[in-house]
Image (cartoon, rainbow, N blue to C red):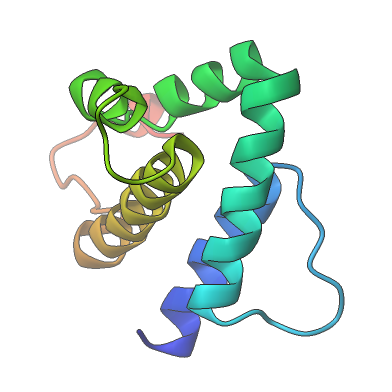
Length: 112
């Protein structure tokens, strides 16, 4: 993962999940570990907020249910952290690919 991509993904996750990273930019693995811990905390103490965040991030509900299923082989917080990280990476990738395009036939008063 390139550093600009990593920085943007990190910034989104830090902001949305109210985490602090200090002065050093974490590696992807360090970010994932921190996110796992934060998700575990939120599952125990702030479940409504966590589910609201996942809804706002547009993470597929079926994938969330799979991560929380009792027979899942990995811990629920790890599964949810993986879904969150992958979704944020996808969001950054899509923003970079499609960005803001200027519509040529849009009236001036409709632009913002």
